[in-house]
Length: 412
Ligand code: SAH
Ligand code: SF4
Image 1: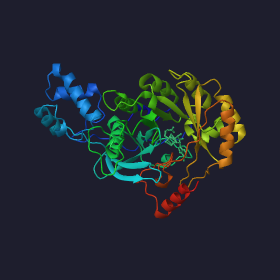
Image 2: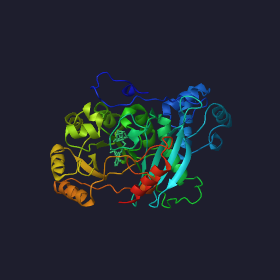
Image 3: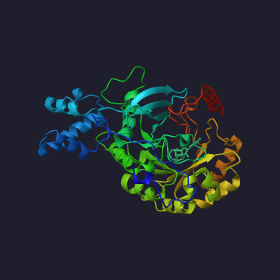
């Protein structure tokens, strides 16, 4: 667990933050997935590879792991048989276990992944990972934690009891799984029925850290994983195509720019502290003014590299034209895009999505003030893959809740 997740005595009274309940314990035979070059070199050194050879061997492993998507040591034909055998005895190339795959009518795919927990017999940890195909790109929405310690009142993930940080390997593993299941590796036989790009392009072109969890509360693992993902000799997705979304963990915002260099998205959702305190309780710790200040100082911020501000449209709560006006004023001078997200309902929520006409009026006001203001089309609602609907199956819903949820999700 990172320090950020431990109990914080400076938090104001009444601050709502769950304590992580579960811990990850590495399996006896760990996976090499997610290791950096330096860590792989270490592994090889421990397997008896001479220091002078390590760099070349790392290069080979890297290529098989991240450019070819190898799932067994056996297929690493350029690696000596002895070394393959040695690695096989001690390590695996395992990704998180896929326990379910759902495909939406709009082509969105959701994978439910099972991860190891602290001890045998405990309930398994589960996270979800969602692939969203569009005409000009394919976006993978990746989870950073099982559940989330924060308790945003409109978010389904925030109601989940179980919380643990994912390892870098489990984060990179989500990208590998998407490529495995989509047939998105060059030189590999795609799974039955996969639509493989015939122009040599890739299906997973963009990554958003917008699945379960607060990525900046698991900063080191997210950073290490994304540094693997951007490496040109492997997965090779550019920093410009990776977005890290935060609910406003101010101290780590600068680090996203400096240590990852990814695009930043900030879940703003309200323009007044009193309202944001109830929607995003973390606001009590880092109020709007400090959050906006951190955004102004985001490293590398330019008109070509703008911050995305996410704003969920909640009927009668934050969707008035007065709110739109205050939003424009608040962001004045920050190179920004505003992403309006229609609220995705879930059973038991007290919120409703704003009326479509109101969303359009809001969007138009922002657009006229000079901001790009796309309304995010809800994707994969029929398989509960839309923003804020992710919640793992271990937190069982009753059959009736599930039906109600599906009915709500299907109606726009
Ligand atoms: N924890 C991070 C990233 C994951 S949430 C964050 O909060 O930024 C991804 C986005 O979905 C966030 O902007 C979040 O506020 C939004 N979201 C959460 N619940 C939602 C819901 N029910 N409907 C629409 N958007 C939601
Ligand atoms: Fe956590 Fe983000 Fe959901 Fe808030 S919106 S509870 S930070 S996942």
